[in-house]
Length: 144
Image (cartoon, rainbow, N blue to C red; front, top):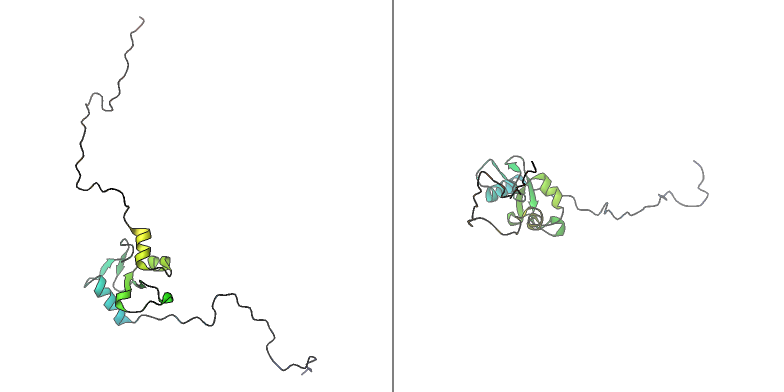
């Protein structure tokens, strides 16, 4: 073995760079157990095999294939209590990140706030079949 010319003991001299991604200090992701998942399904979907995503209400989710989303993200201190969990589809769960389900749902899936025409009667105008668009065509006298 070669002699160490600097008189240093065998230590790792490679520089350690912190890129700010939180490498070792990240908590491991908690997995929501099956009993809690089943309770979330029964609370929000009921005793059915299929239902709609709680967030988008568009995609169909199945009792054996759904994700449990946190209304208040666990990264922001949200609990794993049933009151904070909702049955949602994968795209919604990935799309909302650490935002709350209610915020995400309101921002991307709320109905437009325009005036509703439901219940209002509108007058229908009848057009004559001979002139369906109501144009008046000028008449010209023939020079012949």
